[in-house]
Length: 254
Image 1 (cartoon, rainbow, N blue to C red):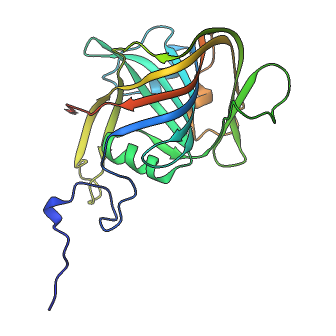
Image 2 (cartoon, rainbow, N blue to C red; image 1 turned 90 degrees about the horizontal axis):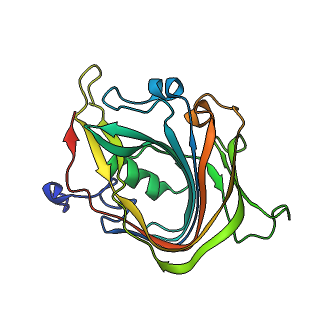
């Protein structure tokens, strides 16, 4: 009787193995519009939501990003990112709390390869649209589930820093816990490791401005509203940007 043709020991991509949902290639992105807002929150609000290995300041830094990706290896999509500044083994990282987006391939790729906590939701963010309220500022919002708005970001531009040009490199790394549960209930996970990553914008037009973050508190199933704003840090708009997610060279078993 005949057998299958796929060489199982050579499989190095996602499932289904006969039709992978994302390519196993370089993670490069272009035609990006990104709004990045930072603020400070309360340590006692954050501590219950992060691993015990991570140290935080008394007023931890929170960064909220809205991304509109025009061209990627897995198509166009919009994404919301919530990160907090932590220290692990003496080094600063951005611990990723949650990413909300609407692209199946991006969700599977991020979760399976890197342990990035990506979940389905609806993100509305298009700074090129003229359909918004003509009040001199940009807005975007996040729904999870669809129809339930959980956060809205606003940006009032004040200064154009520079036109489209190469951006300086940064040593900033993000950190994620990649955990793949065992198929047998009660057994330890087959994979449990910290995964440091470096996502960097390589070029962009840059504006700075005044931030606004509004939480609805509509859902307790997502932590975004549980980190209140004590005071704002910065607000930056990146237009026509390109980015790359550098290869992960080392992971750390926990």
